[in-house]
Structure formats: C-alpha cells, structure tokens
Length: 360
Ligand SMILES: NC(=O)c1ccc[n+]([C@@H]2O[C@H](COP(=O)([O-])OP(=O)(O)OC[C@H]3O[C@@H](n4cnc5c(N)ncnc54)[C@H](O)[C@@H]3O)[C@@H](O)[C@H]2O)c1
Ligand SMILES: [Zn+2]
Ligand SMILES: [Zn+2]
Image (cartoon, rainbow, N blue to C red):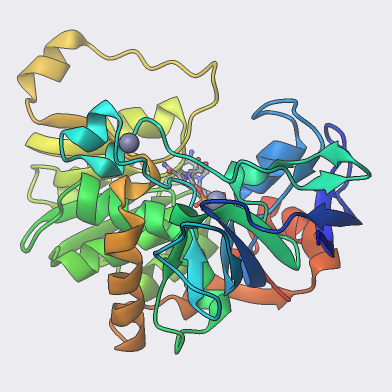
C-alpha cells in the first residue's frame, strides 16, 4: 500500500514551494522507507527550485535528514525497521572502476531508489536523490546509515550534507593534521564545518575569511583562531601576515567563486594544498599563471561530499558529537515546520542562519 504524506514541492522554476500530498511506494528490493524526523534547509534545495540544477520539475525538496527506518525491502541487510539513520546522497555501488580500486568515496555509479514517488500520478524528482521535506521518503538502502539514536535528529541530519562536506574537506580531502595551518574562505554551514574539522584534526592556526562579520563571529565559536573580513582587507596579504609571511598549509574554498578560489590559491604556502568544496556555477572560469601552478608545487583538489564514506564517517562523527567533541548543535540556527521552508530560503539568502531545520 503506498503511503500518502505531506511534502514540500517545487512545481516550477522560481515559484515559491508548496505543501502537497504525495504518494510514497512501499519499498521494493534494495529500498527502504524512512520516517523523517528532521531535515535541514540547504542552499542546494533553493538551487533546485530556482531551476539552476536541471528542469526536471516537480522537485521533492530536502536532503539533510535523519529519521527512523519504517520498512525495509527484500534483500536489505544494512538496516532494519526501527533503526535511527542519517540519509546520504552518495550510496556507493561497490562495483564501478573506482570502488573496485578501493576508493569507494569516489564511487562513479552512486545509486538511489528505483521506484518513483509521485504527485497526482506524476513522478517526482527528489533533491539529490533523497527528497526529505516529507513525512516519509523512499531511498536506496545504501543511502541510509545507522547511527547512535541518542543524537538529536535535528543535529544528526546535518551530517547528511553541508556539515559532512565541510568536515570532510578538511579531514579527508585536505588531510589536515596536527600542526597544520588552515584558511577557510566562506564561513556558511560548509565553511564553519571545515573550521571545526580543522580544529578536530589538530590544526594550530585556523583563519576564517568571509565578507559578513556575523559569519566571522560564528567562525570564532567553531574554532577559528584568526578572522579576516575580506570586504575590508586583502585576504592574501592578511593571511601571509598571520603565518610569518609564508601562507597556510591548506586553503579551503567554501564559496564556489573564481575570486575566492584565486585567493585560496595565493594564500597557501609552498607545497600546500587547495581544496575546492564550494560548487561553482557552470559559467565560472579561473585563470592562473601556469608558472605559479608549477612553481608553488603542492596539490589542487576538489571535494565531492567531503570525500566521505557514510558507513565509515557518519557513525564516527555522531560518536564525537555525543562525546561533546564535535559541536553540531551550533549549526542549528532555528527549528521550523514543513510549511516554513520558503521563509527559511529568504533567511538563508539574507545570511541570517547557518541552518534552519524542519522538524516533523
Ligand atoms: N562539495 C560538496 O559536496 C558540497 C556540499 C554541500 C554544499 N556545497 C557548496 O558549498 C558552498 C557553501 O555552502 P553553504 O551551505 O556554506 O552556503 P552559505 O551560503 O551558507 O555560505 C556561504 C558563505 O560564503 C560567504 N561569502 C560569499 N561571498 C564571499 C566572498 N566573495 N568572499 C568570502 N566569503 C564569501 C557568505 O557570506 C557565506 O557566509 C556552496 O557553493 C554549496 O553549494 C558543496
Ligand atoms: Zn545540502
Ligand atoms: Zn562505485
């Protein structure tokens, strides 16, 4: 029997989202039905509703979620009904050329549920293959990772997207280690998570760069040792001055703009690492003197979802949270109802929140 549930739908490009009743099928082989408890509002949801990702409307929005497995389809072994899970948008296949080489975090064939959720008989496109601004959603079993149920759902769900991307940009992609210096450009949810990840990994200097003083204040709370308001001063010079004239070991770009990418490139020390975790728009271009790319040495990397492996990283991060070593609560700026997502988009655009979290 399909389930009729309330959900947040983007029907057409640029139009405000609406609450609709959708149909969610019972899980088929390899699928699970998850009762959503909390789901964060991410910039990517807004990008879907603005039509910049693709035009496969109607979209079922929401993807930073935690909830309880209600039903598991045939052949599902990683979770059972009653498990508390965090959803992820990169369920690894185990068989592609990257998985076969022992690099599952780069999986090239990640998968989602095969059956479609529908609105008035029309198939929905779930945001990032999840669609969790809904009372229940249907995902592939590999998209659900069991974690300790002692964690608050509104904090735990954030691990499912932006916070994981930021933590992983520092800990996995950037390989920040004890004694490293780090600069993070853009201190929204992703950048502040990169700051926390750098602190956890043992960085001794963590420089936060943003154009919004409210974000820099939060960055201090998450562990930044220095801040630079790049609307007031040149961040490359400021970072050099803060690091004995050398620059940082790891520079993390968490905005997705050519200008901040260039700042990250020039603010790192010789043989340092640049990590791009911000998502650029398709027209963005960077131009760099090739001699600088060569002469500075080091590594230029991109970070898909923080190079995370949900089955490895989610339970570990939730354990750190429960031990009081990883602050997830500070990302939860407010909790809201399902029908307040549109207002939350506006607050996000005004820079007033790190995360508004829908609680069901
Ligand atoms: N790689 C991934 O897998 C992944 C996952 C989730 C999000 N993202 C991307 O990460 C980026 C950040 O996401 P978010 O949720 O933190 O967004 P956000 O809007 O909350 O934060 C962006 C921050 O950048 C700051 N900023 C804007 N222009 C700036 C500039 N010129 N210089 C310095 N700071 C500037 C803003 O003030 C804000 O604090 C986005 O591009 C998002 O799409 C990537
Ligand atoms: Zn997201
Ligand atoms: Zn794979």
